[in-house]
Image: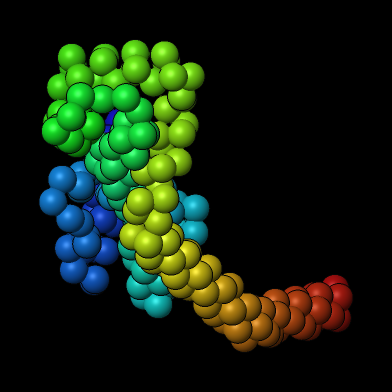
Amino acid sequence: MSEKKAAKSSTDNDLKSFSALVGPPPLLEGEDRRDYNELLARVSEAVKPADIFEEMWVSDIVSLTWDISRWRRLKENLITASTDRGVLAVLSPMPAEPGGEAYWVAKDWAARCPDTIKEVKERLASADISMDIVIALTVAAKIAEIERIERLAMNAEMRRNATLREIERHRATFGKPLRSATDEVVDAEFEQGEVQQIANKKAA
């Protein structure tokens, strides 16, 4: 078996071990399990969990990191999906035919109608209005939802950082008795070596 295949096999076994330990990954509809597994493999490689506690913390870190990415992605998608609000806010004060024409233009924009998108961009250009203004008005219309999503992302980030600190404390606490135990072994071997040297000298 090649080194590349052996490494992949080892990674697959590690992922199965994690799944057995903490259950299936917390994915939503449309999210790719391969991307999640890649993140898990990269974090595991960076942290190198030494015991079951660190394995569980690594799983938490990956899940929280995935949440952070998810909330940021959802915020972007929310703004994109709500751009018709900004288009409507921009078009409403502009000259338009009677009968709520701006409303239907905004709806066609939301439906991604190519002709409407072209028309809106032309009208915005003629009025010297950039898409940045449309996005700003979109954000203003959805600011409450955006702030809630940002709080969720911030909470996930704070929890992830707290978990990382737990690993650091765990390793520091574990490191002290481990160092003491290994020092005792080294000292014992050194003393045994000295005794053997003295015995050898006497025998000589």
